[in-house]
Structure formats: C-alpha cells, structure tokens
Length: 485
Image (cartoon, rainbow, N blue to C red; front, side, top):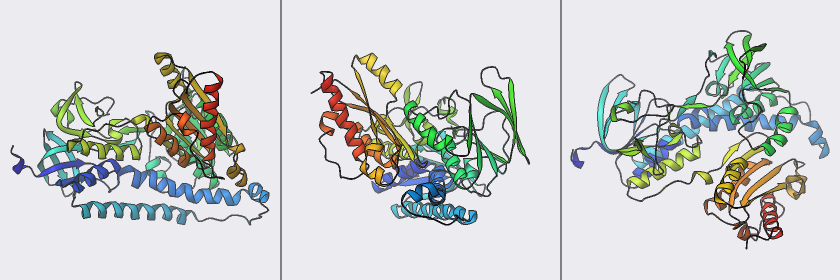
C-alpha cells in the first residue's frame, strides 16, 4: 500500500495515559493521528485509579488529621469533633475526574488528534478493525499502530463480585457508601491506600493477604515501620498466609478463608463489604493479536526496549505497545513515558527506556516510595558482578522539618555500590516520601555516584535533607571500608 493511501500515520488503541502521551507526541510532530477508546477518555488512571483515589485520600487525610486529637494537642491545638459528608467527598473525586478527562480531551483535539469512540482490534499489519459505539464496523489503515489498552482489576477464582457489596477499585473510587466492616483482599498499594481511606472515615477493616507477610511487595525494613503505623495503629485486623477461597456477595458478605499451603478451611467471616485488591490483569483479550502471530504471556503483550511488539522474539513490523498491557511497570507515568518513546522510535530517533529509574509511590498517610533495585535484587547483582553492596539508613527523627511537623516516624534506605558509589535503589517511608523519591530517581537515571551527590547542597530545613544524610553516610561507609573514590 502506498503511503498516500493510508488513512492515518498513527492509530493509537486506548486513551489512557500511555495512549494519550503517544497520540499527543505524534500529533505535535506533524503526524496524522487517530486514537480509539471504547470507554472514557483518560483510561483507568483518570477515571478509576490514580486521580479519583488520590482525591479520596486527600479528603480522608484531612479527616484523619483533624480527628487526631493527640497529635494536634502536641501543637497546643484543640479541635471539635470532626464531621464529614461522604457524598461531598465522593463529589470531589468525581469532579476532579471530569475536569482532568475534559482537559485531556481538549488537549488532543487542539493537537489535531481525531478521537474515535469504539472498540479497536488488529486486522493485520497496518490495519485496525473498529467497531464504533453505534455498531458500525469498519477497517482503518495506518503506517503505525500503538496498542495502549491498559489493564483491568484481577479477581481471583472463587470470588464473586456484584459491584455493590463485593467490588474492585473500579467501584471503590465512587465511594457510594461506607460499610461498617469491610474486608480488603490484598495488601499491596491498592489495598493499603483504600484501607487508609476507609479507616479515616470510620470503617473497621480486615486485611487478608495470601502471602506469608502483610505488604509483601515492599522492602522488609520499610514494611516493619510502615505496618506499625498504617496497620497496627489503626482499626485494621491484618491476616497473612490466608486465601479468600470463596466470597459470596450479599448482606452480609460471606468469606471462606483457607490456609494457602494446605487449602484447608480455617475461618469464615461475615462482613458488610469486600474490596478485591489483588492486582491487575492486561486488557489484551479481543485484540486479535493471534492473527499476526503475536502470543501473549498471561495476557501481557511482549515488547522490546523500544516498545516494538515481538513475535518469537522478533519485532512485528509497524506494531508497538505501551502501558499496563505490556506488564513492565504497571504505573501511569511508566505508560506515559513508554508512549512518548514509542513515537520517538517511530520518528526514527532510537530511544529506549530505563525501568530501573522509574519510581513508584503509595499515597498512604504517611507515604511509601521506592525506585531501583530491592535489597534482594541488589545482593544478587553484587554477587554476579563481584562488588560490595552498601546499605545505609537515614531516619526522619533526625530531620528538623519532620520534627517541626511532629511527623518524625520515617526511614530512607539507600542501596549503592561501594566500589564506585553508584546508586542502585532507594526505599522511603515517611512524610512526603512520594516527592522525596524523585531526587533519587533522577540520580539513578544518570547513574550518579554518592561521591558526587553527597556534596550537593539541600535547603534547610526541609525533608530533602533525609536524602542528603543518606548520601553522606554512604560516602563515609565506603571510606571506612577503604573502597571508592
């Protein structure tokens, strides 16, 4: 097919952050672009994830602060009993979603992107099938296709959802009601954030984790401190090593808990509601990828570092994938970065992505963040490459700003090479941890050494000095052991 006969230069399937950034970047570089979306513009993050959940966390966080009479009294402040309106908190989240969704739509339209509402699929190389919402089915042609179909909540076998008494984060962000007693299945970032919301608004929470410890995906040192404040100090009954083998919606909701190893029934619960927070699965079903020889891995679309879709480890011509559907790092900012990089490669600018330097954050009160390698992965790398691993810890209790805020229960853990001082990773729990991690992420992306970073001046008094102290401790440890510069 000659280039003049293509309908578009680029067709993006999916209008979440990955698809949005890809479409916008392509249009801004003079390409003729269409974006296909079967649901709301903005995808999961804007409509059912990051945006509404952070609005709920912001509002419920204020309630928590005002209700913490012991903390306020330490400042000499005495507040009246806290009152809140659930509906207005929910409206705050809904209004924010509508505003951001509208802004994204206007941005694409101003850039010249054609927005098509319907379900997209692959119909062959450089061919996209489209079933519009009005039922019309047709085929569009383009030079390049970018898959950005995202993910959906994963619901394990044995769990029935009704969207009201047993639901996922998709429904939870609407905050339609506040159950007196809610069970949250899963203690990853989704489970922790909603536990933060629900306990602040007066709900009793039972947290069920199938793995052998609560918060299994977080650094063990961070988990020890965070769990003490985010779980044990709150009205949360956390149970690890148990599988919610059967969940039946109703009033009450019935839960059967089984031992993960033996699968023997060990307990039964009756609660008002259940939030299923057991991760997310890729939205690749129905994309017709098999028609061009692409095999997914548990639904995830295989890609290389340039975002090209792979078939038998070889790039498929003119086909790219970004965001959650790739399974690399299921974060909105990862998807956005991948979308931009895919277009850069389409434009002929060879670029790849450094996943190690992409930070992650959990927006509890206080926050948890991380970037780079875990301690376990860093030890494996040190063994493989024959270098000594350095680990230092910097505590918020020595930070003037944290002490002034009476929020000094926090920790930063820094991982680095002792030979050249290169930063390998960091894990933070404490006030504004989600903001602090970016400094470490930037240094990691540049492969910077603590020997240089330790001499960068940080504003006093700020929380950023927690990072500065960690860098300086790292240099001292290297010099003490007689290694490094």
